[in-house]
Length: 181
Image 1: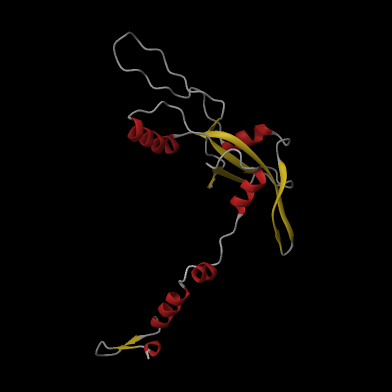
Image 2: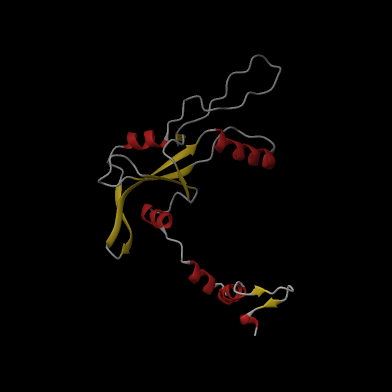
């Protein structure tokens, strides 16, 4: 999942690249490109209307259910920032790029009381994942650092590191550390 701004541009999923005609039999084949201007994510969301948005509860908080309206849409990210790594990976893999941008899912959050969508997330997860599961994955909170450290066996390391930070260096450079005793 990648959070993106509303001004990021993307092609609709059904957009097809078009290869220009060659000028004669000699020369290189021209690369396929998307000839239509790609709209921003905000324009794509505004074009959807209110129908495809479904209300999803992603967790139960201390003040009640956390709920908002979401829509999932298949898009092809556009722009040079999205095209460069895709072109490089395709060139390294097969030696050429066919000009087709890979598709991904755009998750749009538009709360009922908001005038416009508030969040846009791009996901390369499979298309058969239900929207409720996609929202739960997007909204999952990170576990606190103490729980992660404890689960991975890092708790003792962190305690030792904290104890060593209280150590002092004497005037002759000798370490004095109460935790080392």
